[in-house]
Every structure is written in structure tokens, then in C-alpha cells.
Image 1: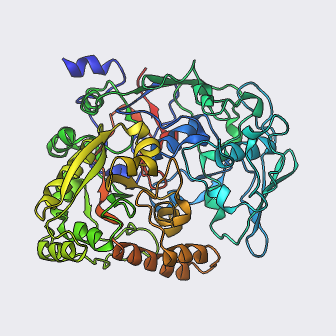
Image 2: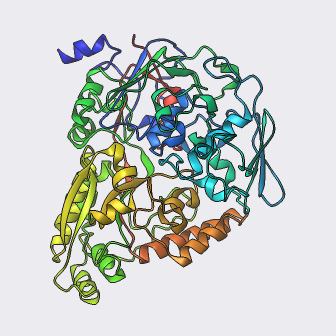
Image 3: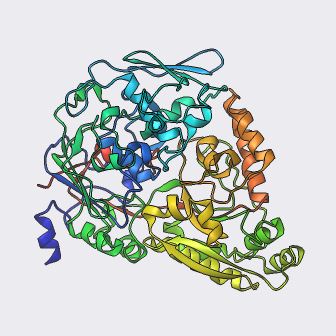
Amino acid sequence: MLTACGGGGGGGGGGEVDAEFNQAETEMVNPSDQTGGTLRYAISSDFDSPDPGNTYYAFSWNFTRYYARTLLTYTEAPGEEGTQLQPDLAEAMPEANEDSTEWTVRLKPGLKYEDGTEITAQDVKYAIARSNFGDQALPNGPKYFQQLLADSEDYEGPYATDGDPLEGFDGIETPDDHTLVFHLNESFSEFPYILIQPQTAPVPPDADRGEQYQSRVVSSGPYKFDGEYRPGVSLNLVRNDQWDASTDPTRRALPDRIEVQLGVDQNEIDQRLVNGELDVDLGGVGVGPAMRGTLITDEARRASVDNPQTNTLRYVNINTVVEPLNNLACREAVMFAADRDALHRAWGGETGGDIATQIMPSALPGADPSIDPYPSDDNKGDLDRAREKLEECGHPDGFSTSIGARADRPSDVSTAEAVQQALARVGIEVEIKQYPSDTYTNTQAGSPDFVHENDLGLTVYGWAPDWATGYGFMSKILDGDAIQDAGNANISEFDDDQVNGWFDEVVTVEDPEERASIYTQIDQRAMEQAVILPAVFERTVMYRPPNLTNVYYHAGYSMYDYMSLGTTGE
């Protein structure tokens, strides 16, 4: 009955599937050029913000491409090829000077917003300014431009003046309407990767309303907002007739309409996916635990299931400021007492991920699986060593702390419970505190003040690379210079002179192999300082309804490539 009802909405249920289990990890499934129909998304939480300049969730970086074009973008391809860069708004790849401190980008001619006005280099510069500079800069998302651009230290941001919002912002030069010249304060060989960020999507200054711009973002892509974004409820998109497909290499723009439902229970999302009432789980992290086992063992649906290994590390931050975890030996006690087998099971066992003992995913240059400072024969922890460390840090009977987790993510909660049970074995009492996903990164775990006030010595988290190198993966979670007051990703507040120095050094190194060796050292040092408790390198269980076309796993976004998708439904 449910399957029949779902069939009218675009296929699903028990339809025949011309595909194999996990096929979308390595190739495109159900290729088609069919246009039309409505592509239906849902998510259990919400965007941190649908504003391209104010977001740091991986699914949002993927989804905002429907209405926000960036200077560069990833190629449309499965596997490692998908992490290669190509121009989007840019006419060609950036040109660097001899020491990689100056990068020139030229825009394609004739690019337009949804209202038909021209997209200019100044609009891209403004977009970067609003997201990176000044006390009122948008809180979510990384601040690579603030860190790297020269001659911008005294710039107070576009919201600090009633005059020219870009006055004093000299780190980016716009000699004409189609050229940007980025002046860096140091050599940075990986700078082109930063130009894929949504922060480079143009924003017309007259339309900007600060954080309220999220209500109706002005489109530069193939779709535009249909009405306003309704936080916690919905975001709908329709075609943008000012988008020129001939200028856009990666957006197929097949559906006529895109609908997103927000705040839907994960179990309901999973059931509606298999019943054909939804097309995509927007979060991109796969089905929940209840559905995961069902799909893996159901031969009738197994051909519609993918189980790719991602570049995402699921882990627990150990804060270096919250007492008594500001003592290295107390942090080491947590590491030795942790039950990795239980953490593995919290993420679904073999189909949920591979046990991690280091920080960098194995696909990244410099990753070293032999890094394991806290071994135990059965992966259940070394309780004797944990008690030795508790004695060393002055808490022989243990101590108490809290662990934060996202309430609407069952695997996060299961991870917190596994940590709670494991640490209790050596007298460390852990209180679990749960928060909503859409505010977790910015307001709770991502706010050092909140972390300190609520005794969040531990926080469950996940991380995928901003780009596929050690710097793109580790700098925001381990570099002391990355710690910020809101939207903080270095939740451990790890501020180590040796590691900070390596991050400063590596960006000046041209040789990729030499850079990789430095990334190995950073990983080793961070593990020895016990600031991250790795759980698993994630595997997701993803369901693709039979009506969904052009489905493949994109390594750059660690989920399906949303820009390629179409539907054979209505």
C-alpha cells in the first residue's frame, strides 16, 4: 500500500533497478538527460544557513551550488577525478606569480544574476569581505581569506561603514569588472582550492542584509528561491531563466523544481526514501541505524544501496582548556580508556566505517595508518594504562565532565553513550548533553565560551576535508590560529607551537611529497597530545530510489553530487 502510494510521486519502493550494490561509489548509476519533474529533499535538522557566505556544512556546500556559482568548482566525476578543479565563474584556472603570493582570476563575460544584472568582480570581492572580515563578519564557515589576504589587517568589514563597503580592503584588487587579483601575505601553493568555497559566490551589495540575506539569496546559478527560506520548515527552488548553461560545465539543471523539507525525523526520511516519497536525504550522511541493517540485508533493495568509504572522520574532541582535561595525562586517560570496538559498533560496524587510530583519512597524502599511540589488543581499551594516567594527572579515582552530541543524529548519540560507558570503567563520569544540529557547530560546540560554561570537555564531531590535502583536512581542526569565538571547528582549542609552526611552514612548500611528510608529523603530534579521539573513517549506507538519475558518490563533497541529479518522476 505504501509502495503504491509512493509510486505516483516518482518511483521507489520495489521497482526494478538496473544497478548493483555500491555501484555509485565508482560510476554513475542510471544516466539520463531527461529534464523536468520535482526533485525532493529532506533533512532531519536544518541548514546552518543557506547563505553561501555563512555556511560550513558539507551538504550545504554541495546544495548551494544550485543557486550560487563559485570561482572554481570540482569536476563532475566519481573517484579521485572528482577532486580535480576546473573553472566555474572563472574563465580559466588562476594564474600565480613566481612565489605564489599573487593569483589572478578572470571572470567569464556575460554572467548574470536572476534579475538580469551583470555579475562583476567587485561582487565577488564583496562576498569574500562580508564572510571573512570585521566584527560583524558572518559567523559560520572558515576564514581562510582573512588569514591569507595581505594588506587587510585593519579592514573592519563591509558592515562597519556607511560609505564604500570595500574601502580599505586591499587584499583583493579589481582592476576591471572581470578581473580579481588576490594578494597573499605569504606563499600558499594550495590557494586555488580555496576558490571553490561558497564564499566566492557573488553577492550584489545592494541586496545584502547581513545574516538575513539567507531569506532570499540572489541567484547566480540555474535555480532561484521560490519565495523565502523558512527556517526549520522548507526551502524551494525554481528555474532561473537568466542562467546560461553554455557557461556552466558542471550543473545539469535537469529538474524543473527542487523542494527541501526541514526538520523531518530521520526514521521518517528513511522510510519515505524507500517508499518513493522522497528522492534524496539532504544531509548526505546516509540512512539511520534502524534502516541501515534492513537495507544491507534486503536482497530486493540491495541493488539500490551504496556503501562508500568517505573522507570523513567521526571522532570526539577532547578540550585542552576545560579542567581537568587541560592536563595531558588526563586526556591520555580518556584515550586509553576508550572502547574503540564500541565506537565502531556505534557507527554501524563494518558498514558504518573502519576503525581509526590516526586523524587523516587514508586517501590523503601523508596519511599513516601505523599511527596508534593508544593500542589495545582487542580494541576495547587499556584500562591499566588509563588508571596510570589518572594517577599521573592527580585524579586517581577519576573525574567528571560532559560530552556534547547532536540530538537528531542517532550515531552521534550512540557514540556519546559508548564513550560514557567506556570511561565509567575507570571512574570518569560523563554526562551526555544533546543539542540540535543546525546550531551545534556555531552556538554550542563551536562556541568556546559555551563549551567552557557547560563543562563540555568532550564533543562528538565529524570532519571532511575542505579540500583533499592534509592542510585542507587538518588546519581548521588543529591549527591554533583557526580558533574563533563562534563557528569554531578547533573545538579541542588545541594551540601547540610545534603544530602551528608546521602549518605555517607547509603552505610555503612546493614539493607535494615534502608537504605530505609534514602532514604526517602533524597527525602524529596531535595524537600524542590526545586532543582527538578518532572513532571511524566513515562508511555511509545511502539509498538511491529507482527514479533518481545520474547518481554517483562525489569524493569532493563526500556524498552524492547534487548537481548531476534528475528524476524520472513527475
